Image (cartoon, rainbow, N blue to C red):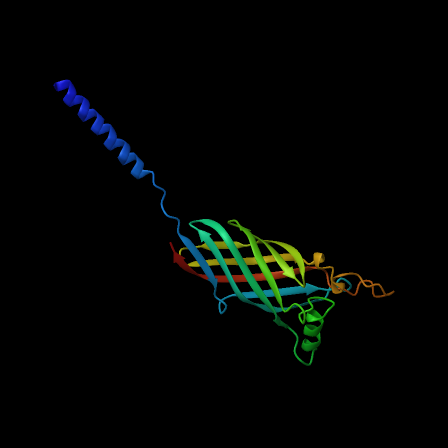
Length: 205
């Protein structure tokens, strides 16, 4: 009788232990967080340099929309849109700012009449770099951007300077001239940028 009682108690104890262990191993539900662009706080500066005499022009262009998504702390996806019609330069009207903008937005470079936006697809994000692919004037341009990146539950920021090589565009304005004496009258395809990206979080299960 005692053996039967102890046997039953042991079986019950083992069954309870297995149930408790099983309950404790259920994975926690992942939290999806999407960071949306704060357009008012975000800035993107550019600087292009001529190959011949080395003089340069600089200015700004606006990121019109963008989002980055994480599952817990793991990057999931991200994309941005740069509105090329918002490009501005450092010159005044008297110095030729409109002529410079027309050149930048013309068919020889970014051809904004046909391609008004640059679409950016984020491939990966590490602690110190954003790897992305830009679709510029119908061409894919890879970009690795070393940045100071900070992510909290409420905000995502990325700041820093980097250079993007636009050679894959095969644009005439980025290539040496074919006319004699004008071989060096082109813009270097390595364009410098300074980004201050600010994004706000929307969290959900």
